[in-house]
Length: 417
Length: 160
Image 1 (tube, each protein chain N blue to C red):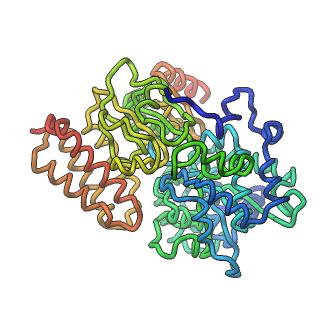
Image 2: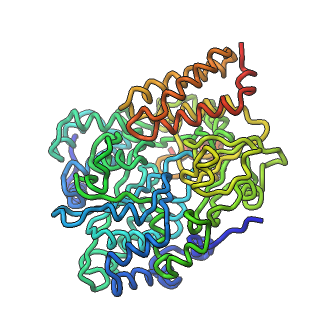
C-alpha cells in the first residue's frame, strides 16, 4: 500500500494554511535560511546539498549539488540563479501547486540556492498564462523585501539578493533551459548549442544555474533535517520524496507526494483511486508527453529516475497520464504530435519538418486511410528525430511516437483503409 | 495613440530596473502593451516598443510572432482558451471546445463580430487534474460541465 508523505506538502495540505509569510513562519519557515545565513559558508551548503543526492525535479534528474559545483568562481562576472517555473509539459502541474499554496517554501529554497552559488540577482520564469501564480509570487516577494529577507543585507548579513518574476508568453520550448535563457533575454525562445553550458555562459553570458521550483523547495528540509534524513527516504541514488501529478482516466486526479521508488501501478491504484468507472488499465505515460508509454503489464515499476530509465522510459517531471482500456492509441498519438508540431521552435530541420509530416501521417490513420507502409514510415520518421536536434525536443517527440506504434500496432491496424 | 501614458511609464522604468540590459524586458513590456490595448498589439506598437528598449522593429516582430500570447489582431473582451492537449483530451476537452464553437458560432482563432468573445485552442495550461477546463483572460474555469459553460456565456452576454 503506497502512502502519501508530507515533507514538501506539509503546509499546503492544511486547508486553513494561507501561504502568507506569517503563516509560513509560524509553521517553522525560514529557520533553514537563518541557519544558512548565520552559520554556514556557501561551500558548506553546497557540500550538504551534494551529500543529500538531491536530483533536479524539472525533468532531467541531474544532481543539483553537482550542477552548482560547475559554476566557475572569480570570473569577475555576476552569477545568476534562474528558476524554471515554466511547467509546460503536458500532464505536469506540481510546481503551480507549490507556487499557489506555499510560495515561501519555494522562495526560502531559492534564496538558499542563490546564497550557495553566490548570486545576487535571481529570476523566476513563470509561464505567461499563469497570471494568478505570477501575482502570488510577486506578492510573496514583496513580503520578503518588507521583512528584510530580500534586498540589501538579507537577515542583517552582508549578503544581498534581488529576486524578480519574469513572465513567459506561451511557448513550451521555453521550458528547455537554454531556450528559457534566450526568452529571458527578450528573444525568441530557441535552444542554444551546448557547450558552453549555462554554468559557464548562461544568462547574459554569465555563470548561470537553472533550477526547477520543486527542486528548490526541497532545500529547507535538507538544511533543517540534514542530508541523511533526506536520503533515508527513497532509494539509493533516488533520494527523498517528490510530488507526482496524476491525470487522465483515474478516479482522483491530482498531486501526490510520495517517496521515490514506490510502485507506479500501486500509486495509481492506492492514491489516485485506480482507473475510473471500474475500467481496466491499458497503458500509462510515466513522465509527461515526452516520455515513452508503458503497457499495463509494464506499469508495476519502481517510480524513480533509474528504474524508469531501465524500463525504457523516463520519470521526466513526474507527470503520470493514465489510459483506460477503451483508449485508442491513434487518438493519443494524434494529440501528442499535434502538441509537438505546434510547439516545435522551428530551428532544427528534423524537428520542424518531422513533427509536421508525422502529424499529417497520423491524420491519415484518423481518417481510416492507414496501411502497413504508412506505419513503417511513421516509425522511420520518428526514429530520425532521435538524437538529431540541438535540444531534447526531437527525442521527446520521436521516442513516444515510435513507441505508440511499436507497443500498440493493433490500434493502428484498426485504422487501415 | 501609440505609446504608454505617463502613469504606465513608471511601470516601464521599474521593469527596466530589473534587468542588466533593456531589451531583456521585452516580454514583460509586450504584455504591458497588450494590457493597455484591450489584449492585443495594434499597428505601430512593435516599433514603439523596439524604440523603448533599443532594439530593431524586426527583432520585436520576430518575438511577437514566436509566442502564442501576443496578438496582432483584436481579441474578444472574453478571450477563451480551451485545452485539448493529451490529459485534457482524455477528459472531454474536445467536447468542451466543440460546444463553445457551436454556442458562440466561432472557430479557434476567430473573434465575434460584437467583440465580446474570441476562441483559441490552447496547449497544456498546467491544470491537467481539473479537466475539462478553459481559461478566460487570466482566470481558469475548472472541472466544467456543459451547463456551467452555457451559464457562463449567458452571464457574459448579460454583462455586456
